[in-house]
Image 1: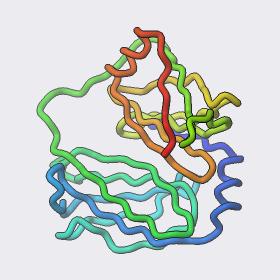
Image 2 (image 1 turned 180 degrees about the vertical axis):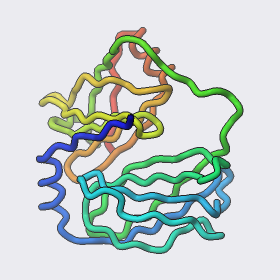
Image 3 (image 1 turned 120 degrees about the vertical axis):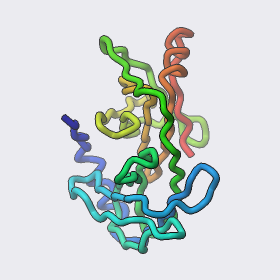
Image 4 (image 1 turned 90 degrees about the horizontal axis):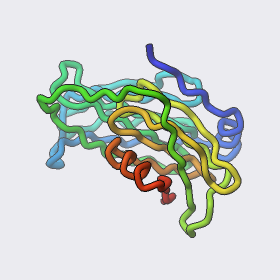
Length: 205
């Protein structure tokens, strides 16, 4: 059963008040060589409780028709209905300027799925802004690679939070002062940080 993200009411209010306008979304899907990837199913969902916004198949140029979106936080899923490509998931913000997204999708390998089991094992996460200062009260979304499991956290005044990584690769999405930064970290890298007694630091862009 898929879990649903619990989005902080304060985040939604902040987004709604800060970015009241809509903007066009230009989206293109490519393969790992940078070539256009046609016939990929693209699904855009709201992360503010509005559900699915639209879905479309990419054309021969790897694009989908331009769509105007209201300001807010969204998730895009690029997948192949018949499994010929890996699923790519990414979050993005819409404000009052056009959004240009390029997604690279790969071809599935023949190895089996990697599943991590065991007791809860949290990790200390630190968030710093572009000046190297703690990003206090940053909103942090932690999810697995398929967005099947996800959870929201809020950084303390020192820009830190105890988070629980999910799966073989964990994506950290940080929302702070109208900007969004996304990083995906492998379970191997996370375990190395734990072994060295270090925290994971996300540098905002």
